[in-house]
Image 1: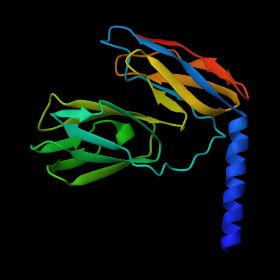
Image 2 (image 1 turned 180 degrees about the horizontal axis):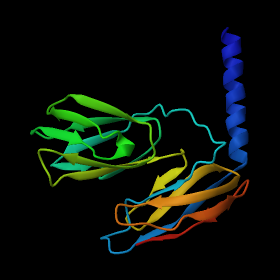
Image 3 (image 1 turned 180 degrees about the vertical axis):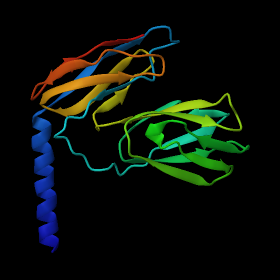
Length: 197
């Protein structure tokens, strides 16, 4: 049994290595008109009908700290379970009116309790707090694992994209950008820039 397990692990590593040999990357810059900086935009590859992905194992966290959502924008893939934590000394009530978040309401709590929600639909999820109306954050649920969030300068990089033709899109809380078609080579980098307005 152990020999079979080792053989399977080796075969899996060989397969992953082979896939990486025919994978490229997408880099570029997103310019967000009218925003303080170009950070927080999510660049992602749209899902083709033939694409299938296992649900992510990692459970990223969305915190409440200093009466703010931290991070302000959290990109995840469909099927991801997100942990919600309250690091403030006051109570928070976390909810969303967004269909992509199933319009959940996690209730009110403070302290070390952690609540979770699994995001099974792609799209924007705006996060709000009934007790602190000034609080606002976002989870963007990408349809594929090929996504990245821009830094303050607007730069992004999506790595290990299998060779092929795709549509690449951008989400930003500040506006929209036109989707672009992109062809990924078996090895190398493709540059795709966007302007959000």
